[in-house]
Image (cartoon, rainbow, N blue to C red; front, side, top):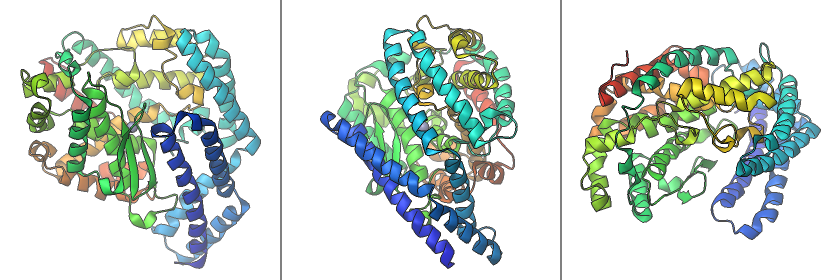
Length: 504
Ligand code: ZN
C-alpha cells in the first residue's frame, strides 16, 4: 500500500475506534444501562462523538485525503481500495466540513427541544404544542440544505445524507408509478384480505418466542460468534466491528408478529454488516452503502422470504411444535393468510406489507412540499389527514395517531422516510435477479436451505460495503436504476392468489 494511503487509513482507524466505542455505549444505553446512569452516559457519548467529529473534520484529515488522492491518481489505479477510500472519504469530509460547529450545535439544541416537545404533544394529543418547535427545525434544515448544496431541489441535499446520489426526481418517478398502481390495489383488497389475523394474537410465551427466533436466524446464517441479540424498546441493529454486529428485538407474549418478523428484519440488516469484506475493517468503507440498500436487506428477509408461502410451509411445523395449543387448530395456509392480512390503518410501523409504502409516500410528499415552500408547518396536520383519506381511506381522529406518530421530524431527520420505501422496491429488484440466478428461491426456502440466497447477497451486495454506491449496486445487479415495477408485480401476484381477487 502506498505510504499516503496507509497514513490516511491509520487516521480512519482511530476515528472508527472512537465512533465504535461511542456506539457500544449507545447500545448499552438502550439495553442494560441502569436508569440512574443516564446523565453520566449522555456526557460520555457526547464527548466521544465530538472527538470523532473533530478528527473527521480536521485539517490533518483533509491533507491526508489530498495526499492519498494524488498518489492514487498517479498510480493510474481506478477500481481498488485506495480509489474507494478517497472517494468515500472525500465525500464525507466535504459534507461534514460544510456545517460549522456553531450550526451543528444550534441544530442539536433545537432538535433536543423539539424532541421533548414532540413527546409532550403526543401525550397530550395536541399538534399545536409541537408546531413552533417543528417550525424551528424545518428552518434549520432549510439552512442545512443551502450549506450542503444541491443542484435542482433543496430536498436533494437532505435526501443525500441518507441515500447518496439519489434525487427528488428519481424518487418522484418511482413513487408516482407506485402511487398510481398501489392505491387501486389497496382499494380492491379492502375488506377481503383480513385473513383471520387474530391467530397471531394468541398466547405465545416470551421465552419460546426468543428461542424460536434465535434458532431460526442462526440456521439462516446470522453468526452468533460475531453478534448477539438482546431486548430493547425499539428494535435495532448496531455495529462495532465486522466481527461484532448486534441486534435487538422486543417480545409481546400475546402477539406473535413483532418479535418474529422484527427479528428477521434486524437479521437482514446484520447479515449485511457481518458480510462486509474484513479487509475494509476500521475504515469508512466498512458500512452499509445507503439506508435504502440497508433496508432492502431487512425487508427481503422479513417480507419476501419470511412472509412467503414457501417459508411458512417449511417453518410452520416447527412453530406448531414450539407453541403447542396456541396453533394446534391452525393450518399452515391459515397462518400464511394471517401473516399477510391487509388492512389500511393509521400507524406506519403497524402497517402491512401492501399499505406500508403509502404511509411512506405521503410523508415524502409532505416533506417535499415543506421544502418547496408550498406547505407550511401550520397546515401540516390538515395536509396529513387529507392524504390519509386519499391514499388509505382512513383519517385519524387524534393527532397522536396522525401527524405526531413518528419521532423523525422532531430529530430533524428530513429525507429519511423515503429510504424505507426505496428499500422495499430495491428488495424486489434484487430478489428477482437472485431468483433467476438460483433457479427459484422458493424451492430452496421450502426445504429450509437459506445458504444459496445468503451467499448470493454476500457476493453481489454485502462484501462491497461502501466501495460501491447504491446506484452502482443497482446497475451492476439489475442493469438499471430504482424501479417500482418488480415490487408491484410481486404484490399483484401474491395477493391476487392469496385473496382470490383480480388485481390487474
Ligand atoms: Zn430496518
